[in-house]
Length: 441
Image 1 (tube, rainbow, N blue to C red):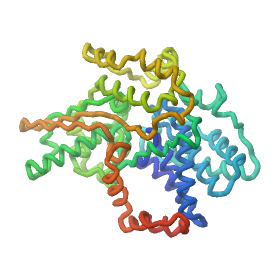
Image 2 (cartoon, one colour):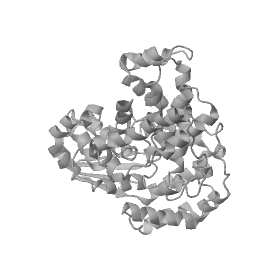
Image 3 (tube, one colour):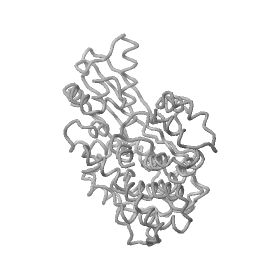
Image 4 (tube, rainbow, N blue to C red):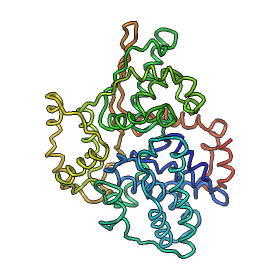
């Protein structure tokens, strides 16, 4: 279990939920406990882990991890899944989740973005603590059950502005609807620009009947919104080409895409990265990541439209203080908007958005989760040394809500190879152990 939890978070960004990553941890804990349970038991535990862990992650959306602080969400997710599979009653399960949260804290960015074994250990630790929490709760140990409501509790320590409405709407709001399947092992905010670049590379092969080489790249301009731009600013301070730098830096991930024309897991192994490091560096130095206010505004407007109940009641002064704390903590501020940017921001009608948040229902059950999309609208322009210009614009990560479901389903099933038939033909009541074994062949 330790190995699987570490690999799930340490080797790349797997399935994600509302920009967070409890889904992979809950699934790993559930699949690792398949013996003696049915397929239906595993599915029930996985969905419950999504809903509980996802809500913890959503409550920390306005925090240092920009919605990607995995540790508390992983702890709650794993405790929920294992507690259900082991038959804990509601009261004991609540204490198990509380104990798991007591033993968890978000990892510093230097650990999460630093790569190497530290990231894998940080990813596994909250899941292992949650395993212990389930055993301790079953033995009678209790936890404070007001952790998530206490104004001096962990949410206030882990977030600039806790979003406590995340814990409403249980049974009516299904965060599982926001599940995205990461078809490439990339950071969520790097997905769209790198996948757009891969499409340019495919177009080049079709047009020229040969691959674009690293030494043929003159310049690559990436224009994107705040999440991708802020990620790249953080990664600028992380030199080298380890697994984390390769899958979390937009510039280096694009360099890897050009150097290998492949973003499968093997491309991120140290041996492969060492072999192509010179070509990756050559391309990465020619990549420019620009922030576009209109794209940030469009994402914000969509978030308010869909997630209004999560953000309801927030005032302008609270949001301003959270933004100031984030800028101070992260060390980066968004570029000063120009005249055209100000026009785009005025069209957004900030006062109107704040008014919508003020009067939005305080119940997540009223959110429009089935309409959520990760609108990370990005334009990539690849310019070659021969004077060619290859633009590509994309709005959604592949495999995320809004992406064609048939394509997502086909590519997810391809991961399981011969085990794909077991996925499609599994019956709810059949034993889960054989099902999981078939998937892992």
